[in-house]
Amino acid sequence: MSKIVVTGANGKTGRVVVEDLLAHGHSVVATDAVGAAGHLSVPGLGTELLIADLTDYGQAFEVLQGAEAVVHLANIPAPGMYTPAVTFNRNSAMNANVFLAAQAAGLRRVVWSSSETTLGLPFDTPPRYAPVDEEHFPFPTTTYALSKVVGETLAREISGWSGVPFVGLRLSNVHVPDDYAAVPGYWADAHARKWNLWGYVDARDVAAACRLALDAPVEGATSYVIAAADTIMNRSSAELMREVFPGVPLTRELDGFETLLAIGRAREVLGYAPAHSWRDHVDS
Image 1 (cartoon, rainbow, N blue to C red):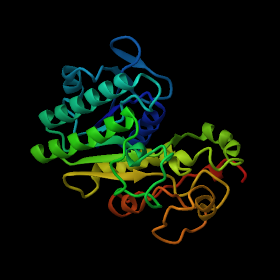
Image 2 (image 1 turned 180 degrees about the horizontal axis):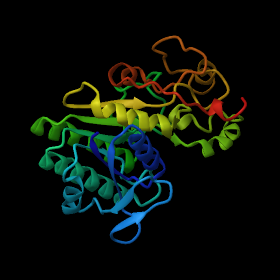
Image 3 (image 1 turned 90 degrees about the horizontal axis):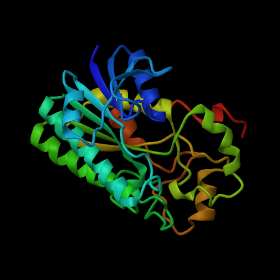
C-alpha cells in the first residue's frame, strides 16, 4: 500500500481517481482548494479532504510530506472560466509548486493532468494529420493550453534535475456516466464537436490511467494522449474526416468508430486499456 496525494480531489475527475486508488489498496491524501480551512467530510469521497491552496509553495510542500507519489489534477480545468491571464498564472503556479515540492520531498513519481488542448485544440485550424498523436505538439491556442505546455516543459526540466519520473496525461474531454445523456444531441452536426476530433474519455478510464502511470516502467518526463477508444459520434471516423476535414491526411486506414486522438502510446507504455464508452449508456 502506497501513500498517494491526489490534488484537485473534489473535482469531477479527482473524485473518481480517489475512489479508484482507495479500491486498489492505496492510502490517499485528498486535497483541494474548496471550503473552509481544515479537514472536511465530503459525501462519497471515501476519505477526508485537506484544504490547500497550491498556488502557495509552502502549502504544496506540506501537502506532499510523507507521500510516495502525487496525482496532480488541481488546475483551472478549461479555457474561458477565468480571464486568460488568471488561467495561465494560477495553473502555472500550481504546477510549478507541486513539481518543485515533489522534488524537495523526494517523491518517487509525479503523475499529472496535461491536456489534449496542447495538441492544437480547438481544431478551427485543421490538424496536420489524423489520428492526432503525441508528436502533434505543441500547438497551444489559449492560455489554458499554454499553461499545460509550460507544465510539460517544467516537468521535463525538474525530472532531469531530480531523477523523479513525471508522467503527463493529455486528457481528452472527461465524461462521467451522467454526462452521456447529452451525447445524442451531438450527432446532428458533425462540425459541432470537431474542436477535439469528436474525442472524450470516461473518468473511470482516467482513474485507471493515473493508477497505471504510478508504476509504469518510465524514466524522465513523458506524456500520453488519454482518450476513449471510440469517438463520441454515431458515424464512422472515416466518414467524419471526409466531411469535416477532407484535406487532412490520414496516417493509416481508420477502423469503424475508433478514436482520432491516438492512444497507442498509452496502451504500449502504460498498459492503458479504456474500458468505458458512451455506448454502454446510450442507444446509438
